[in-house]
Amino acid sequence: MASYAAALPFFFASLLTTRCHVDPRYHVKDPNRVFSPALVFYKELIEQNIAAMVRLARDPARLRPHVKTHKTPEIVRLELTAGITKHKCATLAEAEMLALCGAPDVLIAYPLVGPNCLRLAELIRKFPKTSFAVLVDHPAGAAMLSEAIAGSGTNVRVMIDLDVGMHRTGIAPGPEAESLYESLARLPGLVPAGISAYDGHNHQENLEDRIQAVQTLLEPVVKLRANLQKRGLPVPAVVASGTPTFPVFASLDIPGLECSPGTCVLHDHGYGSKYRDMTQFVPAALLLTRVISKPASNRLTFDLGYKALASDPPAGKRCMLLDVPEYEPILQSEEHFTVATPEADRFRLGDVVFAVPTHICPTCAVHKEAYVVEKGAITGTWQIVARDRRLTV
Image 1 (cartoon, one colour):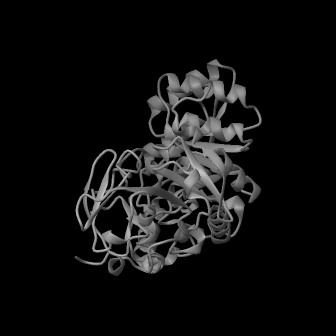
Image 2: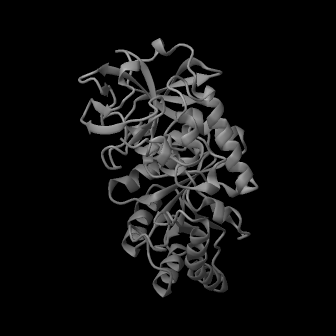
Image 3: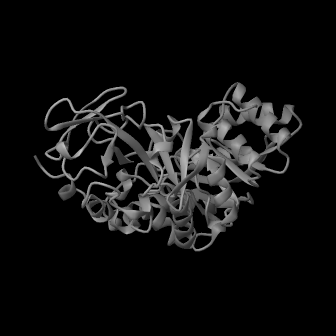
């Protein structure tokens, strides 16, 4: 059986030296207060990651972090305390959560169609102290949004969503994109606010490869912006980057650039084991699980099925157990996670084990709340508020 530790580089391999509380930062004094499986947030580590994000950006005004990762008001407030005033989200529920926290500037980085345009208009009326923005990538979408917003007697900032290689949403840089952006200045209720150039397809492990990818995608974006400005159209902001390319964009001096990482606030095993240039971020959200069965002399089963963590990574790669030095995933079902390990006899039923999720964003979304640890003690719970599709609007 191959050792999992041998395959895990950087920060993570060092966590696997002993079975219990292998890293003092993850020690919990009173784990019996936690019902498993549970999501656990370490407040000091979240604050550490936010501070690292601000340092990397060089100015909190250059940040627009994505709240999809955590969906949690308390984390938004920690970001506001750190001087971050601009936020990005994907759902109207996330936008409303941000407004309820007093966030002054919220970008909904998602095309709104149908009744959701009217929901946005209601949000704008309900939260006049929050300035909302939204993306469009098609003339029909812009017209639909204009009708709903202008019909409600309000207005909204609108950014053009550029497809810079992901081919998920967006319009390619070029004449059609210029025409679409120009139409925003004419449509009632819409205010041109800039460009979104999200490159979620760039996951190159090597930093130099990511740098080259960013340079390539930026060339048509910069050209488009210059052409729009020559027409007398304001293009005040360029929102770009996910977590992998955040260090690259953060190093650039582009007027109005806003970096929009998300994962690094909580961090996870997927990114932490891959990017050597991002070791300033550490996992701040773990899963607490317990041994519920020992079905064979070399097997342990935990109460950590795929209803407790993201199932988009392949089976067996959805998390990393911190407290089991050597193991091989055998099976995972809805409520069970079984591994083979020569360490099985060291564990008793009920023993607590911690796991780092491979993909933290959808893992948060399957939990109603997270237990919060401060200085090793459970101090309460934070609700994952925006996991719901609707709050009040």
